[in-house]
Length: 354
Image 1 (tube, one colour):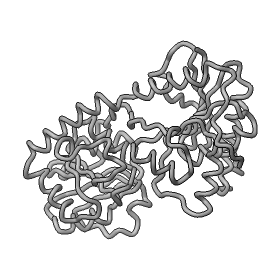
Image 2 (cartoon, one colour; image 1 turned 90 degrees about the horizontal axis):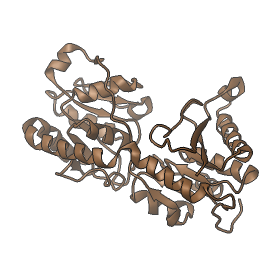
Image 3 (cartoon, helix red, strand yellow; image 1 turned 180 degrees about the horizontal axis):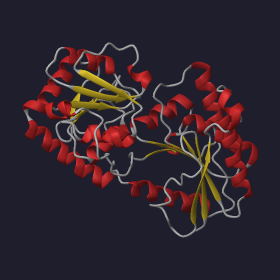
Image 4 (tube, helix red, strand yellow; image 1 turned 45 degrees about the horizontal axis):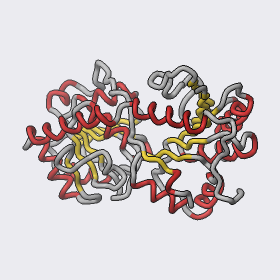
């Protein structure tokens, strides 16, 4: 079995080899074509995203020229659409897996229709919650049989040796919140306002905390390096993931990372994360938008440390069993067996053209 996986990504550079370390079978090779801006024109023109489309067409050309069977692997939905357009033009018989197919905000109107057209014929989509299978099937007219659930997988986070927090805060103790997508930090700010003796550290993206009036007992950081972020997490008493709605499918990286580190968790009760937490078994779960329930859960971390520690230990064991990168490696071995072994593979089609 000889298969060359060509990854197209907006976020990763050309040296990234995705799963090469855990999926190192003889004959399986990995390449990344990066959509990061290259040159003055790509940096200046943001719409359309020229770097993304340049990378998509480079990946498709590479798949057509390859001396061994290739599989295109796009990362995130917009790159999936661009890659699929390029594939249909340049190498229509090359399989395409749309990996990490996830939306923070669902597209509507013309944007949804354009994406639906661009995605027709993708062989398989990979999502990180079972809830998203039916959601995207309905939204884009995709047969649900082509949407595969895989649990989010990652290496155990590596906290840095030094915290960016001052010694007095480390000595006092704190709870943390990490992540920049789909978070209801406004709700968390209001809950913290009524608990001046409790300290909260937030590490987020600028857009997720802009225009929020945080009380003095909340400290915010934006765009911290991963090592410093996980240092803050591992030194905390617990981590809270306040999601916006009961259907928000975000927070998987933070959630699984915290589970690997054995941290007590408070998570909004959302269909998008129910594959990862079991209320009162592996985490405290609270309804979306419920400030009273969130406050009670925050207080419980200090009031019932043994109970929340037991949940954290159960979550850690579950993460070690289910969220290793080996899970993704096994999936791509199966992809190679299904799609890469036959030169006559024809991509999926639903009978419509873009």
